[in-house]
Length: 113
Length: 116
Image (cartoon, rainbow over all chains, first blue to last red):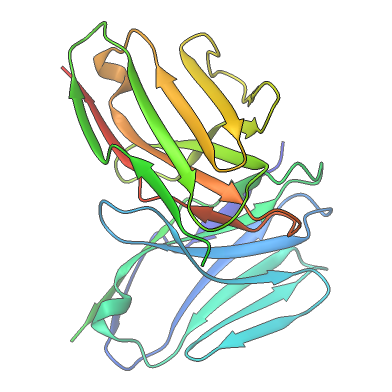
C-alpha cells in the first residue's frame, strides 16, 4: 500500500545551523506534500506545503524541495532557533483524490542554544 | 484564518462510558473533516473521513460502531467513543479540509482522552 518514510527520527543541531528532514513516498500519483510542526500536547500546524507542479518553495527560513522522479521531498530550515524545536511530520496525498494524507513517522528536532 | 477548534481538550472517563468530541471549523466551511488518533511518540493514524451530510468512511481496522462520527453541518463534526476502555486512551485530533482547495488540511488542537 501507500507509504511515506521519514528520516531521521531525531535530529539535534546547534542554534543557527541548518536542519534537513527527508521523506520518500511510494505512490507516484501523490500530488500534494505538506509539512507539519507539532509541539508537545498540541495539534499539528501546517508550516509549508508543495504541489507536484513545482520543484521548490520557500517561506522565510523554511523551504521544501520535491523530486517527483525520485519520489522524495525534503524540508530545509535555515538559521535554526530554539523555538524551532518540535516534532515535524511530512505527508503525501492519496492518489484516490479523497483528500486523505499519509503521514511520515515524524522527526524530533532539537535546537540547542 | 483557517482555525479549527476541538472540545473538550481533555477528558477523563470511566471504563464503559461514552465520550463525545467536537471538531469545529471556525472561519471556513469544511465539507470534509478527518479524525486521527495519535499514541505517544507516534505518528498520526487516520481513523475516518467525515463528509458533511453522508456517512463517514472508516479506515481498515477501525470499528465504526465503536467510533461514531456525525458531520451534520459544514462546520461541525463529532466523534463519539462508545463504551470506552483503557486501550482507547489516546490523543484524538481532527482536521478540516479547506473547501475547494484539494488536500489542504488544518488541524485542531487535539483532545486527550484518558479512560480509567
